[in-house]
Length: 116
Image (cartoon, rainbow, N blue to C red; front, side, top):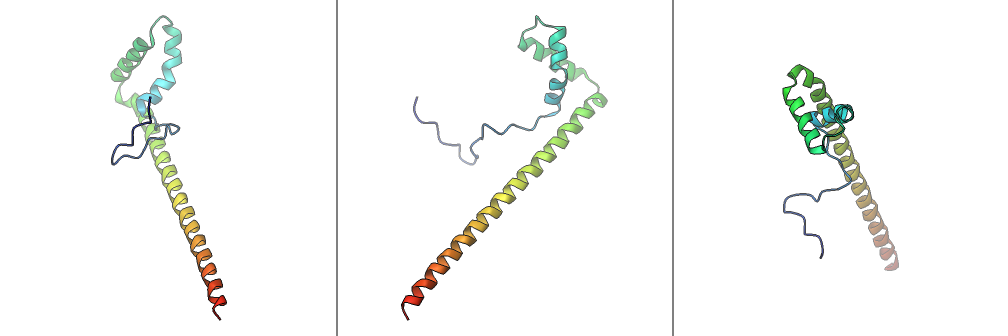
């Protein structure tokens, strides 16, 4: 099998544990899937997804609006959470560097005491 391929240039490696923020259709699908599955138990998943996609496309925009608004709310929440995690990581890195610099200074001070 061999080692995994290196990450593509310019792209961060994907974290398989991080789910994508759902779009409006995904929210719609989650809301109606079970109901449609119960109405159409004989349909294959492929056909059921096609039915849901057709239903979504034929929905009036005013009915899609609730799903679109919720999807946007989730995108904003996700973006804020990612920004918060990035800031926390940067702060932890800064504190670690400061602590490391402090230790180096203290070690340097001890050497100066030996010379006197």
